Length: 391
Image 1 (cartoon, helix red, strand yellow):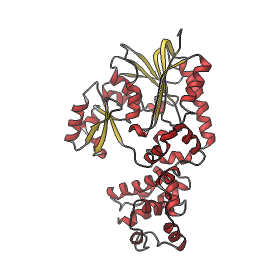
Image 2 (image 1 turned 120 degrees about the vertical axis):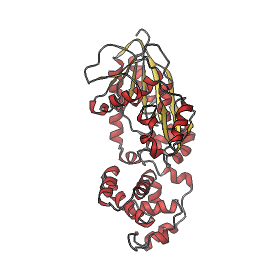
Image 3 (image 1 turned 30 degrees about the vertical axis):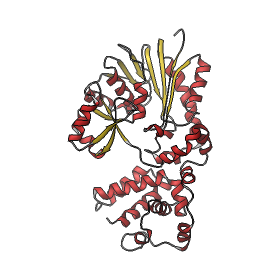
Image 4 (image 1 turned 60 degrees about the vertical axis):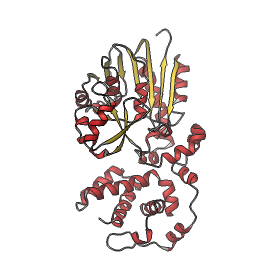
């Protein structure tokens, strides 16, 4: 495919996404219908689509319309692509610019900070600006770029330097990241990770550095009894098992299907993790982890489509659900135990305010709290450790 044909494909996929079709499905459907497209073509089209979704507001402003074509025109303008030679209408190239598009592209572009602010949903921007304070513009700019790829080194199996050497031998370059002693940032060769021996044999796992940092902050305790209450795929449970191999860990999720791959992942990592179905949790735990359902605003570099689909009502429903889950999870904390509440959100409403409400209502104390943002290198992530006297 020519560069122009790739832009045409991205335009069609974005139009489908703007009409309500999930981006991944639209990309899959295009790939199945476009057998002529090679792996490089598919990767380039995917990059165009996700770049446009991350920067939907600013690219629409730069390109003159909120449409697949407008977003790709905005992308071309932002990335200094040769628009005149790409939008020709020849072969599979996008059609030439019309008068309105030429006028939009001729207009002066807003300054960089103003453009970055456009890449948040309008209704959510005031809350984010208040919650992030002086860092708002910096974080806004960082959220427009692709997220780094991070690996968690399984410290129960190897150390970070050895993992680096092993990965390098397979063409995967990495560098230690300061957020956690287990964290490696992948510099090159990310597409080779899942085929590498280190990954297949459980010495490394894909996991954001901010997520790793939250587990790294858990106080070590011999024979810890831990419950991962909203386990999902089990990434936090695996990280905890690697950090404390003698811990007795139980993973639970309201939808057991989300944990279907966890037994295989645990076997690969050399970890022992029991699964508990809903309503089947028994006994008390020294530590209960709650990685709560949330807006995901801290991960929108990875899932940009999600930020445009979030609504005020959905956010309100999530906040209510978080409160309900906190109350339920707290019942499983043994006397003297702790509750670790986490979200991948940047919003105080889901984070500090949620924890403060719970602590005041239920008689718990917040003993540690940490908000990470992309300024720290990883995703936006919040964690708070709570204890209750007399328990």
